Length: 451
Image 1 (cartoon, one colour):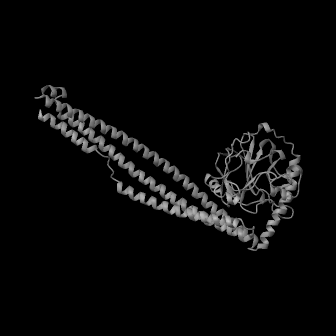
Image 2: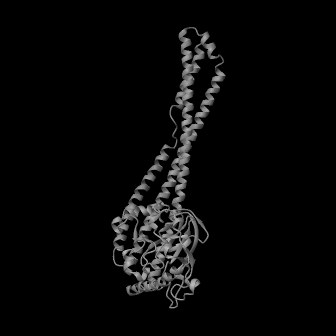
Image 3: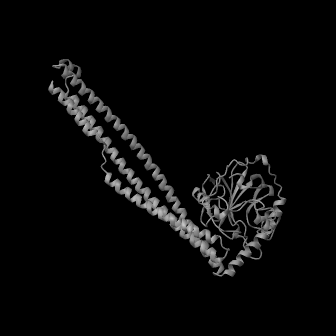
Protein backbone atom coordinates (compact mmCIF):
# COMPACT_ATOMS: atom_id res chain seq x y z
CA UNK A 1 0.00 0.00 0.00
CA UNK A 2 2.96 2.34 0.43
CA UNK A 3 3.40 2.35 -3.36
CA UNK A 4 -0.13 3.61 -3.82
CA UNK A 5 0.17 6.45 -1.32
CA UNK A 6 3.44 7.90 -2.67
CA UNK A 7 2.06 9.07 -6.03
CA UNK A 8 -0.79 10.90 -4.32
CA UNK A 9 1.63 12.69 -2.00
CA UNK A 10 3.90 13.42 -4.94
CA UNK A 11 1.03 14.89 -6.95
CA UNK A 12 -0.01 17.15 -4.09
CA UNK A 13 3.52 18.47 -3.68
CA UNK A 14 3.92 19.04 -7.42
CA UNK A 15 0.55 20.75 -7.74
CA UNK A 16 1.17 23.00 -4.72
CA UNK A 17 4.62 24.01 -5.91
CA UNK A 18 3.60 24.60 -9.51
CA UNK A 19 0.52 26.71 -8.83
CA UNK A 20 1.47 28.41 -5.62
CA UNK A 21 2.00 31.90 -7.24
CA UNK A 22 1.44 33.49 -10.69
CA UNK A 23 4.41 33.94 -13.00
CA UNK A 24 5.65 37.44 -13.85
CA UNK A 25 8.22 36.96 -16.57
CA UNK A 26 8.18 40.62 -17.68
CA UNK A 27 8.16 42.31 -14.25
CA UNK A 28 11.42 44.20 -14.84
CA UNK A 29 10.31 45.40 -18.28
CA UNK A 30 6.96 46.60 -16.89
CA UNK A 31 8.81 48.47 -14.12
CA UNK A 32 10.99 50.25 -16.69
CA UNK A 33 7.90 51.26 -18.67
CA UNK A 34 6.24 52.64 -15.53
CA UNK A 35 9.36 54.71 -14.83
CA UNK A 36 9.05 56.29 -18.27
CA UNK A 37 5.34 56.98 -17.68
CA UNK A 38 6.16 58.71 -14.38
CA UNK A 39 8.84 60.83 -16.11
CA UNK A 40 6.31 61.89 -18.75
CA UNK A 41 3.85 62.89 -16.06
CA UNK A 42 6.48 65.09 -14.40
CA UNK A 43 7.05 66.88 -17.71
CA UNK A 44 3.27 67.29 -18.14
CA UNK A 45 2.99 68.86 -14.67
CA UNK A 46 5.81 71.30 -15.49
CA UNK A 47 4.25 72.24 -18.85
CA UNK A 48 0.84 72.79 -17.29
CA UNK A 49 2.45 75.16 -14.83
CA UNK A 50 3.93 77.08 -17.79
CA UNK A 51 0.51 77.15 -19.49
CA UNK A 52 -1.07 78.63 -16.36
CA UNK A 53 1.63 81.32 -16.21
CA UNK A 54 1.01 82.22 -19.87
CA UNK A 55 -2.71 82.45 -19.16
CA UNK A 56 -2.03 84.99 -16.40
CA UNK A 57 -0.01 87.07 -18.88
CA UNK A 58 -2.83 86.82 -21.43
CA UNK A 59 -5.35 88.02 -18.85
CA UNK A 60 -3.11 90.95 -17.96
CA UNK A 61 -2.73 91.96 -21.62
CA UNK A 62 -6.49 91.58 -22.19
CA UNK A 63 -7.22 94.03 -19.41
CA UNK A 64 -5.27 96.79 -21.21
CA UNK A 65 -6.55 99.17 -23.87
CA UNK A 66 -7.13 97.60 -27.27
CA UNK A 67 -4.04 98.62 -29.21
CA UNK A 68 -2.08 97.00 -32.01
CA UNK A 69 0.75 96.23 -29.61
CA UNK A 70 -1.54 94.55 -27.05
CA UNK A 71 -3.31 92.56 -29.78
CA UNK A 72 -0.04 91.30 -31.28
CA UNK A 73 1.25 90.51 -27.79
CA UNK A 74 -1.90 88.56 -27.03
CA UNK A 75 -1.57 86.55 -30.24
CA UNK A 76 2.08 85.77 -29.47
CA UNK A 77 1.24 84.59 -25.96
CA UNK A 78 -1.57 82.45 -27.33
CA UNK A 79 0.86 80.78 -29.72
CA UNK A 80 3.29 80.07 -26.87
CA UNK A 81 0.45 78.61 -24.82
CA UNK A 82 -0.68 76.44 -27.72
CA UNK A 83 2.87 75.21 -28.25
CA UNK A 84 3.02 74.16 -24.59
CA UNK A 85 -0.36 72.45 -24.91
CA UNK A 86 0.92 70.54 -27.93
CA UNK A 87 3.89 69.33 -25.87
CA UNK A 88 1.49 68.22 -23.12
CA UNK A 89 -0.55 66.28 -25.65
CA UNK A 90 2.58 64.72 -27.13
CA UNK A 91 3.63 63.57 -23.65
CA UNK A 92 0.15 62.15 -23.06
CA UNK A 93 0.37 60.28 -26.36
CA UNK A 94 3.77 58.87 -25.35
CA UNK A 95 2.34 57.82 -21.97
CA UNK A 96 -0.66 56.18 -23.64
CA UNK A 97 1.66 54.17 -25.88
CA UNK A 98 3.74 53.16 -22.86
CA UNK A 99 0.60 52.18 -20.94
CA UNK A 100 -0.44 49.96 -23.85
CA UNK A 101 3.06 48.44 -23.83
CA UNK A 102 2.83 47.76 -20.08
CA UNK A 103 -0.60 46.20 -20.40
CA UNK A 104 0.61 44.07 -23.30
CA UNK A 105 3.43 42.72 -21.13
CA UNK A 106 0.92 41.92 -18.40
CA UNK A 107 -1.31 40.15 -20.93
CA UNK A 108 1.68 38.07 -22.06
CA UNK A 109 2.41 37.06 -18.46
CA UNK A 110 -1.16 36.04 -17.81
CA UNK A 111 -1.49 34.11 -21.06
CA UNK A 112 1.75 32.24 -20.23
CA UNK A 113 0.52 31.49 -16.70
CA UNK A 114 -2.80 30.17 -18.03
CA UNK A 115 -1.08 27.96 -20.61
CA UNK A 116 1.39 26.62 -18.04
CA UNK A 117 -1.31 25.88 -15.47
CA UNK A 118 -3.53 24.17 -18.02
CA UNK A 119 -0.67 21.99 -19.29
CA UNK A 120 0.43 21.05 -15.76
CA UNK A 121 -3.07 20.10 -14.63
CA UNK A 122 -3.64 18.02 -17.76
CA UNK A 123 -0.27 16.29 -17.31
CA UNK A 124 -0.88 15.43 -13.67
CA UNK A 125 -4.39 14.15 -14.38
CA UNK A 126 -2.94 11.91 -17.11
CA UNK A 127 -0.31 10.67 -14.63
CA UNK A 128 -3.02 9.80 -12.13
CA UNK A 129 -4.95 7.87 -14.74
CA UNK A 130 -1.85 5.96 -15.83
CA UNK A 131 -0.31 5.18 -12.38
CA UNK A 132 -3.33 4.79 -10.12
CA UNK A 133 -4.68 1.45 -11.33
CA UNK A 134 -6.44 0.65 -8.03
CA UNK A 135 -9.60 2.71 -7.29
CA UNK A 136 -9.62 4.74 -4.08
CA UNK A 137 -12.37 2.56 -2.57
CA UNK A 138 -10.29 -0.56 -3.17
CA UNK A 139 -7.27 1.13 -1.56
CA UNK A 140 -9.30 1.94 1.54
CA UNK A 141 -10.68 -1.60 1.85
CA UNK A 142 -7.27 -3.21 1.39
CA UNK A 143 -5.46 -0.86 3.76
CA UNK A 144 -3.44 -2.75 6.38
CA UNK A 145 -4.57 -0.52 9.26
CA UNK A 146 -7.21 2.07 9.96
CA UNK A 147 -4.44 4.69 10.04
CA UNK A 148 -3.32 3.74 6.55
CA UNK A 149 -6.89 3.98 5.27
CA UNK A 150 -7.34 7.40 6.91
CA UNK A 151 -4.08 8.68 5.39
CA UNK A 152 -5.08 7.46 1.93
CA UNK A 153 -8.48 9.24 2.14
CA UNK A 154 -6.88 12.42 3.50
CA UNK A 155 -4.36 12.52 0.63
CA UNK A 156 -7.19 12.17 -1.88
CA UNK A 157 -9.09 15.04 -0.25
CA UNK A 158 -5.97 17.25 -0.29
CA UNK A 159 -5.40 16.49 -3.94
CA UNK A 160 -8.98 17.40 -4.84
CA UNK A 161 -8.72 20.64 -2.86
CA UNK A 162 -5.45 21.56 -4.59
CA UNK A 163 -6.98 20.86 -7.97
CA UNK A 164 -10.02 22.96 -7.09
CA UNK A 165 -7.82 25.85 -5.93
CA UNK A 166 -5.79 25.74 -9.14
CA UNK A 167 -8.95 25.83 -11.24
CA UNK A 168 -10.10 28.85 -9.20
CA UNK A 169 -6.72 30.53 -9.78
CA UNK A 170 -7.07 29.91 -13.50
CA UNK A 171 -10.47 31.58 -13.54
CA UNK A 172 -9.11 34.59 -11.64
CA UNK A 173 -6.20 34.89 -14.07
CA UNK A 174 -8.60 34.74 -17.02
CA UNK A 175 -10.71 37.53 -15.46
CA UNK A 176 -7.59 39.67 -14.92
CA UNK A 177 -6.59 38.98 -18.52
CA UNK A 178 -9.96 40.18 -19.80
CA UNK A 179 -9.63 43.32 -17.65
CA UNK A 180 -6.18 44.05 -19.08
CA UNK A 181 -7.49 43.69 -22.61
CA UNK A 182 -10.36 46.08 -21.83
CA UNK A 183 -7.80 48.54 -20.46
CA UNK A 184 -5.78 48.28 -23.68
CA UNK A 185 -8.93 49.03 -25.69
CA UNK A 186 -9.64 52.09 -23.51
CA UNK A 187 -6.01 53.25 -23.78
CA UNK A 188 -6.14 52.99 -27.58
CA UNK A 189 -9.37 55.02 -27.65
CA UNK A 190 -7.69 57.64 -25.47
CA UNK A 191 -4.71 57.63 -27.81
CA UNK A 192 -6.96 58.26 -30.81
CA UNK A 193 -8.66 61.18 -29.02
CA UNK A 194 -5.25 62.66 -28.14
CA UNK A 195 -4.07 62.35 -31.74
CA UNK A 196 -7.20 64.20 -32.89
CA UNK A 197 -6.62 66.84 -30.20
CA UNK A 198 -3.06 67.51 -31.31
CA UNK A 199 -4.26 67.94 -34.91
CA UNK A 200 -6.71 70.60 -33.70
CA UNK A 201 -4.06 72.27 -31.56
CA UNK A 202 -1.68 72.54 -34.51
CA UNK A 203 -4.48 74.05 -36.60
CA UNK A 204 -5.09 76.52 -33.79
CA UNK A 205 -1.46 77.65 -33.95
CA UNK A 206 -1.76 78.08 -37.72
CA UNK A 207 -4.98 80.12 -37.34
CA UNK A 208 -3.39 82.38 -34.73
CA UNK A 209 -0.28 82.95 -36.85
CA UNK A 210 -2.40 83.68 -39.93
CA UNK A 211 -4.44 86.27 -37.99
CA UNK A 212 -1.28 87.87 -36.68
CA UNK A 213 0.28 88.06 -40.14
CA UNK A 214 -2.91 89.45 -41.67
CA UNK A 215 -3.10 92.12 -38.99
CA UNK A 216 0.53 93.15 -39.53
CA UNK A 217 -0.03 93.27 -43.30
CA UNK A 218 -3.17 95.39 -42.96
CA UNK A 219 -1.67 97.84 -40.48
CA UNK A 220 1.93 97.85 -41.70
CA UNK A 221 2.67 97.61 -37.98
CA UNK A 222 1.37 101.14 -37.41
CA UNK A 223 -0.92 101.92 -34.47
CA UNK A 224 -2.73 104.65 -36.42
CA UNK A 225 -3.60 102.18 -39.18
CA UNK A 226 -4.90 99.71 -36.60
CA UNK A 227 -7.18 102.29 -35.00
CA UNK A 228 -8.40 103.28 -38.48
CA UNK A 229 -9.41 99.64 -39.13
CA UNK A 230 -11.29 99.57 -35.82
CA UNK A 231 -13.12 102.77 -36.75
CA UNK A 232 -13.92 101.38 -40.19
CA UNK A 233 -15.38 98.24 -38.63
CA UNK A 234 -17.59 100.33 -36.40
CA UNK A 235 -18.82 102.49 -39.30
CA UNK A 236 -19.51 99.48 -41.52
CA UNK A 237 -21.35 97.75 -38.70
CA UNK A 238 -23.50 100.82 -38.11
CA UNK A 239 -24.53 100.90 -41.77
CA UNK A 240 -25.25 97.18 -41.79
CA UNK A 241 -27.28 97.21 -38.58
CA UNK A 242 -29.37 100.10 -39.87
CA UNK A 243 -30.37 98.05 -42.90
CA UNK A 244 -30.81 94.86 -40.88
CA UNK A 245 -33.16 96.33 -38.29
CA UNK A 246 -35.41 97.64 -41.05
CA UNK A 247 -35.50 94.19 -42.59
CA UNK A 248 -36.19 92.49 -39.27
CA UNK A 249 -39.13 94.75 -38.54
CA UNK A 250 -40.70 93.96 -41.94
CA UNK A 251 -40.31 90.19 -41.93
CA UNK A 252 -43.72 88.54 -42.00
CA UNK A 253 -42.63 85.73 -39.69
CA UNK A 254 -44.57 84.76 -36.60
CA UNK A 255 -42.95 83.10 -33.60
CA UNK A 256 -45.18 80.86 -31.49
CA UNK A 257 -43.72 80.73 -27.96
CA UNK A 258 -45.52 77.47 -27.27
CA UNK A 259 -43.39 75.73 -29.89
CA UNK A 260 -40.13 76.69 -28.19
CA UNK A 261 -38.31 74.49 -25.66
CA UNK A 262 -39.07 75.20 -22.03
CA UNK A 263 -36.75 77.77 -20.46
CA UNK A 264 -34.33 76.40 -17.87
CA UNK A 265 -34.22 72.85 -19.18
CA UNK A 266 -30.52 73.08 -20.07
CA UNK A 267 -30.99 71.48 -23.48
CA UNK A 268 -27.89 73.19 -24.88
CA UNK A 269 -24.26 72.50 -24.05
CA UNK A 270 -21.66 75.26 -23.95
CA UNK A 271 -20.05 75.62 -27.39
CA UNK A 272 -16.56 74.86 -26.06
CA UNK A 273 -14.83 71.88 -24.53
CA UNK A 274 -15.22 70.93 -20.88
CA UNK A 275 -11.56 71.82 -20.29
CA UNK A 276 -12.07 75.30 -21.77
CA UNK A 277 -15.16 75.95 -19.64
CA UNK A 278 -13.37 74.71 -16.52
CA UNK A 279 -10.58 77.18 -17.25
CA UNK A 280 -13.23 79.91 -17.46
CA UNK A 281 -14.62 78.93 -14.07
CA UNK A 282 -11.16 79.43 -12.58
CA UNK A 283 -10.97 82.99 -13.98
CA UNK A 284 -14.10 84.53 -12.48
CA UNK A 285 -12.06 87.49 -11.26
CA UNK A 286 -11.21 88.35 -14.88
CA UNK A 287 -14.70 88.26 -16.43
CA UNK A 288 -16.96 88.57 -13.39
CA UNK A 289 -18.66 85.30 -14.33
CA UNK A 290 -17.84 81.59 -14.65
CA UNK A 291 -18.19 81.34 -18.42
CA UNK A 292 -15.79 83.91 -19.98
CA UNK A 293 -18.80 85.96 -21.12
CA UNK A 294 -17.81 89.47 -22.19
CA UNK A 295 -21.23 90.58 -23.47
CA UNK A 296 -24.63 89.32 -22.38
CA UNK A 297 -27.90 89.12 -24.30
CA UNK A 298 -30.29 92.07 -24.54
CA UNK A 299 -29.97 95.64 -23.36
CA UNK A 300 -26.65 95.29 -21.64
CA UNK A 301 -24.72 98.40 -20.56
CA UNK A 302 -22.52 98.20 -23.66
CA UNK A 303 -25.49 97.75 -26.02
CA UNK A 304 -27.35 100.63 -24.37
CA UNK A 305 -24.31 102.89 -24.63
CA UNK A 306 -23.83 101.98 -28.29
CA UNK A 307 -27.28 102.03 -29.95
CA UNK A 308 -25.67 102.75 -33.29
CA UNK A 309 -24.14 99.25 -33.16
CA UNK A 310 -27.03 97.24 -31.75
CA UNK A 311 -29.90 99.19 -33.36
CA UNK A 312 -31.43 100.02 -30.04
CA UNK A 313 -32.84 96.53 -29.51
CA UNK A 314 -29.92 95.16 -27.55
CA UNK A 315 -27.35 92.47 -28.13
CA UNK A 316 -28.80 89.46 -29.97
CA UNK A 317 -26.57 86.77 -28.42
CA UNK A 318 -23.74 86.33 -25.95
CA UNK A 319 -20.03 86.90 -26.57
CA UNK A 320 -17.56 84.42 -25.09
CA UNK A 321 -13.88 85.35 -24.99
CA UNK A 322 -11.76 82.69 -26.67
CA UNK A 323 -8.27 82.80 -28.17
CA UNK A 324 -8.11 82.58 -31.96
CA UNK A 325 -8.11 78.94 -33.02
CA UNK A 326 -10.13 77.58 -30.09
CA UNK A 327 -12.30 74.65 -31.30
CA UNK A 328 -16.01 75.60 -31.34
CA UNK A 329 -18.44 72.76 -30.61
CA UNK A 330 -22.06 72.17 -31.57
CA UNK A 331 -24.30 73.00 -28.60
CA UNK A 332 -26.81 70.34 -29.67
CA UNK A 333 -27.19 67.73 -32.39
CA UNK A 334 -28.76 69.02 -35.57
CA UNK A 335 -28.21 69.93 -39.21
CA UNK A 336 -26.10 72.71 -40.69
CA UNK A 337 -28.70 75.15 -42.00
CA UNK A 338 -26.09 77.35 -43.68
CA UNK A 339 -22.58 78.79 -43.42
CA UNK A 340 -21.11 82.03 -44.71
CA UNK A 341 -18.40 84.65 -44.64
CA UNK A 342 -19.57 88.26 -44.68
CA UNK A 343 -15.96 89.49 -44.92
CA UNK A 344 -15.93 88.43 -48.58
CA UNK A 345 -18.52 91.08 -49.42
CA UNK A 346 -17.67 94.78 -49.95
CA UNK A 347 -19.94 97.82 -50.12
CA UNK A 348 -19.96 100.47 -52.84
CA UNK A 349 -17.01 102.22 -51.17
CA UNK A 350 -14.94 99.05 -51.18
CA UNK A 351 -15.24 98.50 -47.44
CA UNK A 352 -15.68 94.97 -46.11
CA UNK A 353 -19.03 93.94 -44.69
CA UNK A 354 -18.04 93.78 -41.04
CA UNK A 355 -20.84 91.69 -39.62
CA UNK A 356 -20.73 88.06 -38.53
CA UNK A 357 -17.53 87.32 -40.42
CA UNK A 358 -17.32 83.53 -40.81
CA UNK A 359 -20.46 81.97 -39.35
CA UNK A 360 -22.32 78.67 -38.97
CA UNK A 361 -26.01 78.20 -38.15
CA UNK A 362 -27.51 74.88 -37.02
CA UNK A 363 -31.19 73.92 -36.94
CA UNK A 364 -32.08 71.47 -34.17
CA UNK A 365 -35.60 70.31 -34.90
CA UNK A 366 -36.96 71.39 -31.50
CA UNK A 367 -37.94 74.91 -32.53
CA UNK A 368 -34.54 76.61 -32.20
CA UNK A 369 -31.43 77.34 -34.23
CA UNK A 370 -27.97 78.12 -32.87
CA UNK A 371 -25.53 80.60 -34.39
CA UNK A 372 -21.71 80.62 -34.16
CA UNK A 373 -20.00 83.74 -35.53
CA UNK A 374 -16.60 85.49 -35.90
CA UNK A 375 -14.92 82.14 -36.66
CA UNK A 376 -11.44 81.88 -38.16
CA UNK A 377 -12.21 78.55 -39.86
CA UNK A 378 -15.34 76.59 -40.72
CA UNK A 379 -15.23 72.76 -40.64
CA UNK A 380 -18.80 71.90 -41.69
CA UNK A 381 -21.00 72.47 -44.73
CA UNK A 382 -24.66 73.12 -45.48
CA UNK A 383 -26.90 70.08 -45.01
CA UNK A 384 -24.38 68.17 -42.89
CA UNK A 385 -25.66 66.35 -39.80
CA UNK A 386 -23.71 67.04 -36.60
CA UNK A 387 -23.79 65.61 -33.09
CA UNK A 388 -23.57 67.45 -29.80
CA UNK A 389 -19.97 68.44 -29.14
CA UNK A 390 -18.80 68.05 -32.73
CA UNK A 391 -16.24 70.65 -33.82
CA UNK A 392 -17.84 73.16 -36.19
CA UNK A 393 -14.76 75.32 -36.70
CA UNK A 394 -12.23 77.47 -34.88
CA UNK A 395 -12.92 80.73 -33.05
CA UNK A 396 -11.49 83.97 -34.39
CA UNK A 397 -12.15 87.67 -34.81
CA UNK A 398 -13.56 87.93 -38.31
CA UNK A 399 -16.39 90.35 -39.02
CA UNK A 400 -17.20 93.03 -36.47
CA UNK A 401 -14.83 91.87 -33.76
CA UNK A 402 -12.13 94.00 -32.22
CA UNK A 403 -10.90 91.06 -30.16
CA UNK A 404 -11.02 87.26 -30.42
CA UNK A 405 -14.34 85.81 -29.23
CA UNK A 406 -17.31 83.67 -30.23
CA UNK A 407 -20.69 85.26 -30.81
CA UNK A 408 -23.20 82.58 -29.80
CA UNK A 409 -26.85 83.15 -30.63
CA UNK A 410 -30.11 81.23 -30.27
CA UNK A 411 -32.99 81.88 -32.68
CA UNK A 412 -36.59 80.70 -32.98
CA UNK A 413 -36.50 78.55 -36.13
CA UNK A 414 -39.83 79.72 -37.53
CA UNK A 415 -38.77 83.37 -37.24
CA UNK A 416 -35.45 82.95 -39.04
CA UNK A 417 -34.43 83.06 -42.70
CA UNK A 418 -31.09 82.82 -44.50
CA UNK A 419 -30.93 85.60 -47.09
CA UNK A 420 -29.33 88.84 -48.23
CA UNK A 421 -30.74 92.34 -47.80
CA UNK A 422 -30.85 92.71 -51.58
CA UNK A 423 -32.97 89.56 -51.92
CA UNK A 424 -35.57 90.94 -49.53
CA UNK A 425 -36.05 94.51 -50.70
CA UNK A 426 -33.32 95.51 -53.08
CA UNK A 427 -30.93 97.09 -50.59
CA UNK A 428 -27.76 98.37 -52.21
CA UNK A 429 -25.60 99.63 -49.34
CA UNK A 430 -23.81 98.05 -46.40
CA UNK A 431 -23.98 94.27 -46.55
CA UNK A 432 -26.57 94.09 -49.31
CA UNK A 433 -25.03 90.99 -50.88
CA UNK A 434 -23.79 89.20 -47.76
CA UNK A 435 -25.66 85.99 -46.98
CA UNK A 436 -26.52 85.64 -43.31
CA UNK A 437 -29.26 84.62 -40.86
CA UNK A 438 -32.00 87.25 -40.58
CA UNK A 439 -34.71 87.01 -37.93
CA UNK A 440 -37.77 88.90 -36.87
CA UNK A 441 -37.05 90.76 -33.62
CA UNK A 442 -39.10 88.33 -31.50
CA UNK A 443 -37.06 85.38 -32.81
CA UNK A 444 -33.91 86.32 -30.90
CA UNK A 445 -33.70 84.20 -27.74
CA UNK A 446 -31.44 84.48 -24.72
CA UNK A 447 -28.87 81.65 -24.95
CA UNK A 448 -28.61 81.52 -21.15
CA UNK A 449 -32.25 80.39 -21.07
CA UNK A 450 -31.22 77.09 -22.63
CA UNK A 451 -27.61 76.53 -21.54
